[in-house]
Amino acid sequence: MKVLAINGSARKDGNTSILIHYVLGELRKQGIDTETLTLAGKKIHGCRACYKCFENKDNRCSMNDDLLNECLGKMIEADGMILGSPTYFTDVSPEMKALIDRAGFVARANGDLFKHKPGAAVIAVRRAGSIHAFDTINHFFLITQMVVPGSCYWNMGIGGREKGDVEKDEEGIRTMKVLGENMGWLLKKIRD
Ligand SMILES: Cc1cc2nc3c(=O)[nH]c(=O)nc-3n(C[C@H](O)[C@H](O)[C@H](O)COP(=O)(O)O)c2cc1C
Image 1: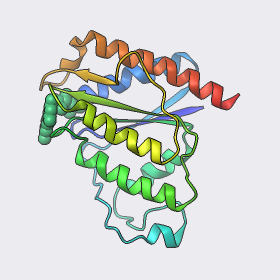
Image 2: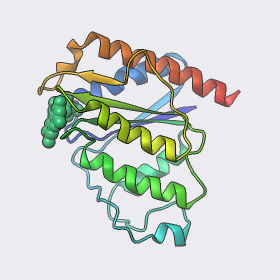
Image 3: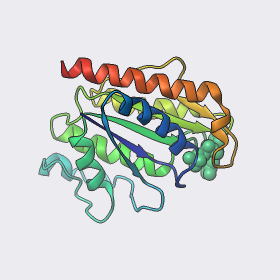
């Protein structure tokens, strides 16, 4: 079993990465394989609304000049996924939104490719807007017929502007660990 984490932060090894790391650590303790893809510095365009995915039905986006189809292939293959994002102006990063729009359309155009896979959002925030970003990712999971595990709080880590600040948010770290435990539990139940 494998969980794919996609980090939508514009910077590598920042707070989103730290939070994802705690969730994946718990999954690995349960014998679940993990892989992380980071969108920082990579090209990923927004959807251009060509609707070719609904004509081609080949599990791919018609735009082939960026990272999306590689991400999509890994999302299709994975048993579960974590989508992580920092909060930017009370929402997800533009890279994460591009992934949601395009992967979501391709999944729906091809018979709900992510149906019944567990999916969890992970959000880094300095001060405000994390719930809105969390909701954006959960809307994607729910309309693609995925299953969303909970934690002991909503899945956010509160920190400052600097990389690593989120380590000081003890409750946030605990929330990530419980999320990892619950996601592992759910994955095994689905597989049973
Ligand atoms: C363009 C931009 C917009 C941001 N907007 C918000 C915001 O609306 N609310 C907030 O609390 N923090 C905001 N932040 C701060 C980040 O969410 C926060 O520092 C987060 O920990 C960064 O995660 P990272 O280290 O993974 O990049 C913003 C940062 C940037 C670069």
